[in-house]
Image (cartoon, one colour):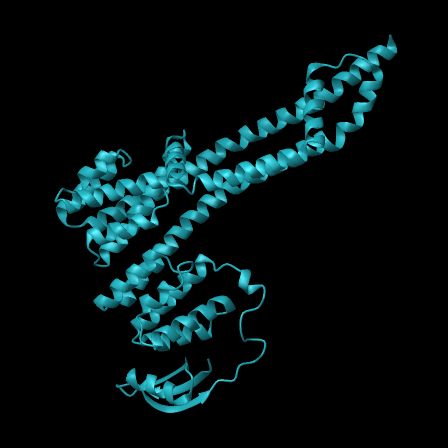
Length: 406
């Protein structure tokens, strides 16, 4: 669909510039008129071949969370300064470098221009804009506070991205260590050890137990790598299919929550996310029951999701908020106490935000402590494995030397 560059004056006489798409010039003028603009100049935008469409590589490129956050922040700023939604979308679209995201924004703009609401336009792209995002935008449109809601969404996205980034950064070093250990062990087992096998066998001397073990593992790795790879692939595919079922997902999530050290950490991360999202929804004016419905769909853990569902049912029956949280057994006493205090004082959104603020540094410290403890442990394990392989090679060599001397 062609694009038209326009200059128009709004009801206050201010000059506005932008780009709108439409089948022809008359339809674009009609759209501007419905927006309350008086057209001063309009002309069709000429597209260059290099900028048109989405490239082959862009089709496979995922949109980063940062790009969505920047878009949300920019749109909130433009709306707050008095810019109408369509011109604001046009302005952001014109300066978007990612061609894939640019195309999505153009399609959203066209949908809004056709008469649908902004939230309905966003709903067509669930991979980019989550259900939480769409629900909060819908509330912002209804209450006439879209700029404030977008600001909250941008802040929420930034906080979640920062916490996720800190956790990922803390895990980089252990992952690098594991990768190096895997490469070193495979090199020794497959590249180095087989060269000594013929010498050991030719000597016809009894091989030490460590050497027999390592040679057996090396033989399995060299001769049976293909069926082993097939078996591992089959197990991975089966497991992925299993955890997609309700029964499998429930069992795996239940085991994960009970897993030593990592289970409580995972639970804290989920509680922090729940508190942050529910706080944002409530502060945006969404009723508690509707907010809990939205939160349910944003929580990945099935056990916690069922607990939130039970809370929602309990509130619908007239019970207090804190009691069903306590019954679930997933929320620590301090969280339940803060929820009860927020419910009584009418500041539940503030108290939930306090819960998130309380747990975020605790999660970061726990992850740092875990990685600090894991590093020497992994180095020790890697050293022991390498030493065991080296010993399995050296022991028969020492035996051969003693035989030759004898």
